[in-house]
Image (spheres, helix red, strand yellow):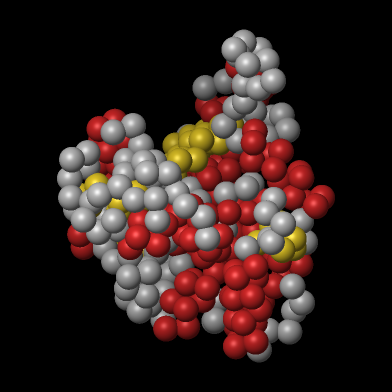
Length: 351
């Protein structure tokens, strides 16, 4: 941890962020879920997607670019497939509704696939796939985002970094959770580097002309580079098709980024899927096979015997245990910004 960072107790942070969101007009229930989703992300160590985003979320909720009381409703339905209209609500709340419905469908039909349009930034995709894993199901979540990734050789962004997650219960200490975006890094990591006053690697992002830069401020105003070259780019295209295009929402250049257009709805789309694994095999068999899988991964040799072979979700689990015990580190300028929001919104809960 940077010595300049401020350690905050996760329970205090949860109460504080919940109170901020309640003041913007969210219901008590939705404010609590929204806040928990962000604090959990920090507990997992994904600081680029956690409470770092609270200032812009609050700004958009206050301006009503993001609707604090959305009327989320089903607009298309075909047995195991549905599409929801998110009514410009927070992506976390729209995503919650979509995954809950996917799980409900999977309990009846063994699979549920629910899209959502007219939403906003939803945080980390793993928030939603973990919900399915907690129900003993395989979960898939994905979202499109504003164009921010430059194709190899391109000078302007062509696609979003379109995150997706897959989670599977292991019935051990933590679920298997793959949660990635399709740029070399997320825009949030570049923002975090800016908050910390740090340089970034040249393969993270470009300036507004598409030229690689180590300046996080230039990269944040510019574009991201895809992970794995054409491979990551192709998967990003696929996510775009499965979310905005096939669900009937907007796609590619029709979306509006929340930082560039803070007063406009983002018009983001999501896709959530839940699969009832028990339709394929009993829980004991799943647990046995996942245990065997985990053991084989862990026992795989590494050339550096000081390193470990870990599963997706394992680092997050360890980080959560450490941060629950020791606190969540926040950049000092973010800490002060949160205190400023509390004063502005007349929130009296202590951070």
